[in-house]
Image (cartoon, rainbow, N blue to C red; front, top):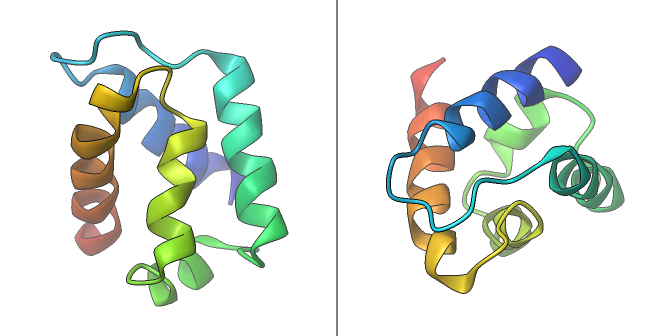
Amino acid sequence: MLADSVDFFVRVRSIANLSKKPATAEFIDWLAYLRRIGVQSRASLVAKRNDIEVMASVGALCKSQDDVSPVREELLAWLNEK
């Protein structure tokens, strides 16, 4: 899960129109949130991709409310890739 999470985090940081890119603290918060909702692997994250808690998890990565939508879009694209 960690390698996949880092991959997604790097993708999020590369989104051009974010008002403020997430840092390591937000990444750790996101991982902790995923663990609390029972995500143990990328496969379990994919299985829960339509779950409101998974979509809400991107809030932990975002420093601005304006960034939530593009990060959610990136999460869905990333989950649908593999």
